[in-house]
Amino acid sequence: MVFEWIRFILGTGLLVVGTVTFLLEIFGVFKFKYVLNRMHVAAMGDTLGISASLAGLMILFGFRFVTLKLALVIIFLWCASPVSSHLISRLEYVTDKNLNEFCEVKTENKGNE
Image (cartoon, rainbow, N blue to C red; front, side):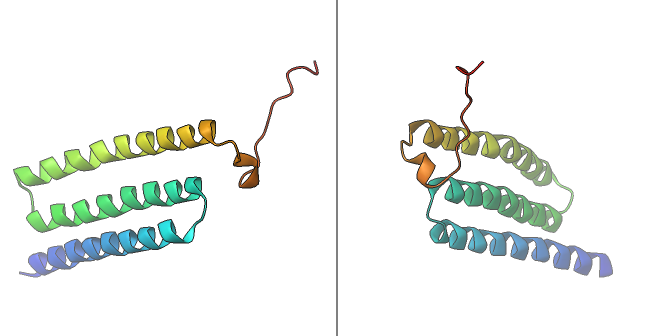
């Protein structure tokens, strides 16, 4: 009985952490003005929020086949989310002509050798 309560409290706590992370992510996306800052907040918030929420669900479900599926979803999202965010941010970096207004851009001097 005590083990069930501990599992319930831990699983619910992780679900609350995931929900709070999502709410902070939404606040950050609307607060920042530049797209790369927004991308960073969205990527980090999604990774942490989804992982915490799914880990909470894994604890609440117990040791079943559903737990294995949720673990595979967490692994897939931990691999895919940073890659997709990096590619979208790289596209913004390559195509934005006014990048110097928002960021310090380092250029290499290849002609001064």
